[in-house]
Image (tube, rainbow, N blue to C red; front, side, top):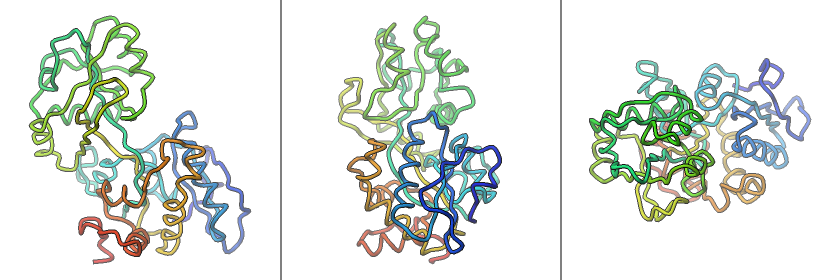
Length: 324
């Protein structure tokens, strides 16, 4: 599954530094919109690989994000792509919005930084817990987005039914500022301020809702693959709390040759500092350990090989069927 940049129609391709040769694998990354800061990460990875490995030429493809990348990957248009975990797991198993449509050839390539679903409410409201959202006018995220779906699923598992205010994110922030809704869910980094939340704060003080151990147990009873993370603080001075998170994950398929996957993973894992010069969010990240701890979908055999050589203990659930 080696997609040539020229065969991707209107998708924008950012070519690497190495000219294509007959014995060079032409590989492409399904990234995201060029307007996203995450696009810079993929460009930096492509430049690193093209400058380090002699047998690959990697291009970056501008896409619509995770769901678009899953489609492109399943159709052989890209060789790996950016997704969120557990979305990759749901697509692999045929769960949630992919019910009955499993894709057993999908594999985890590597996992990077977390993205939190932040439940924001007005500080002067009576809403002090996730359960208190029951019956309240609340926006679960941009209409039709993965954030909105995650809000529906998590609160549904708890038996909490807000009066859902379904609209785009910009309109939701305006509705919050105008006191038409009590709050909203916004996907954002757990350790850096989010611009939409900062904008909301210009009109109303906010409170972030914590997930109690009881909340987490109720959600994971129905969605055991949903992830939560304890933090000591947030950019909003909340103090310690639990956050519902997903992890930015690179997904590929078992069709990628093992040696190719091994060399790519090794290069990315051992050169995080170089990539961080362009995308600072990964600075200091141990990609090998993060992948072992946070991946939910079976790993590519080339990744398993590298991790075993490094002495990592890999859970049985992450060993792909072709290695069992």
